[in-house]
Length: 223
Image (tube, rainbow, N blue to C red; front, top):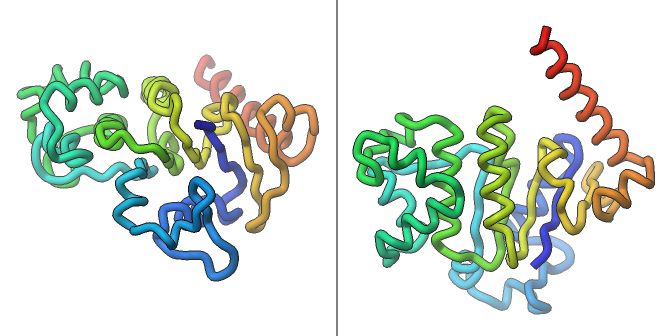
């Protein structure tokens, strides 16, 4: 039931850990255990039926909003689809679309903004009710206003689930139970936000640099 955040510079190994966990490729050395069992002893179907995955670049299929959400669980009722959309703050914008849930999203979701596509991907993942949730830089390619909506959705979705969050913006993971700070394929520091800030090590530097950059951007906007 914990939220584990993975932070570090590009190439530090964050996505590799996530890809191993999803079994997109398998470990050459060592083993990955889920509930104490080597995941190679279970079927891929078992793993993927317990897994929710939201990527940095959201992917939608040609078809309606409803069909895209329903892909998370094909036997879901309309009420369940709407409940999933409400949970992730997507229902409001969907109802403003021309035909609501029956609106065609266009090829690859081309008729929607990146933020809207991301919220539909969240609704799809939530509908499947996964035990494990993986967010790979899910807020990296959207503006800060949409990020607040999505961050609120993330906070709701992750309650009572085990989740791994690969974070680009460190402000989004300050409430994580455990933060793993990675560098060159190794875990350099481990702890929650407060503990890592007290260390005044690598995480502290990453966080303060990003905080100062954001502050400067805000000040420039005000000018």
